[in-house]
Image 1 (cartoon, rainbow, N blue to C red):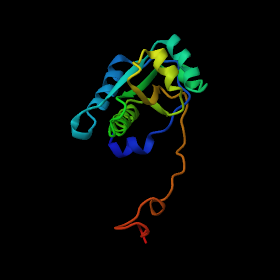
Image 2 (cartoon, rainbow, N blue to C red; image 1 turned 45 degrees about the horizontal axis):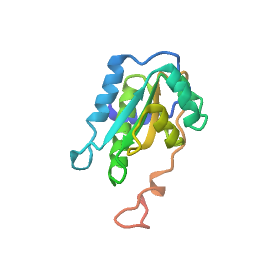
Image 3 (cartoon, helix red, strand yellow; image 1 turned 90 degrees about the vertical axis):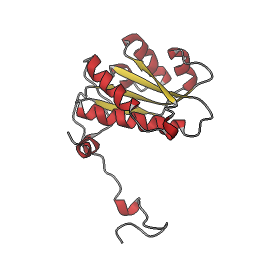
Image 4 (cartoon, one colour; image 1 turned 60 degrees about the vertical axis):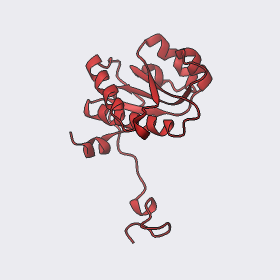
Length: 168
């Protein structure tokens, strides 16, 4: 699969099959994240990967009652050092690479930004001096998701200076 196809096919998946993600595939996802670029190549992030069913069930409360969190066979919490300006961006790049690798492997993902950081840290044993920035679920999609409408380039891109719309 070419990267442009993975970009075109990526969807936010909130309904997963009750099928575990094979260890080899999980390792490929994590390797895709590891290879992501980061400011000064510092890789200032860590991932907490949860596959245990009972723990995932507890994470539903931490994730504002988003029930699909328990059904996804893999839950990933992205952790950074507080105060590092680039760490959340570097983490996001790593997770996006993971999400695109997931598409190639026939898996789906969903970014999760609505959560109680305090409760997540408690449930996952994340130290108080760390920050949970974003989370992601991973698994086999239970259904096909149609593409969502996206804004045209002319509404998003300015050419040479702000106000000069791309394509005008």
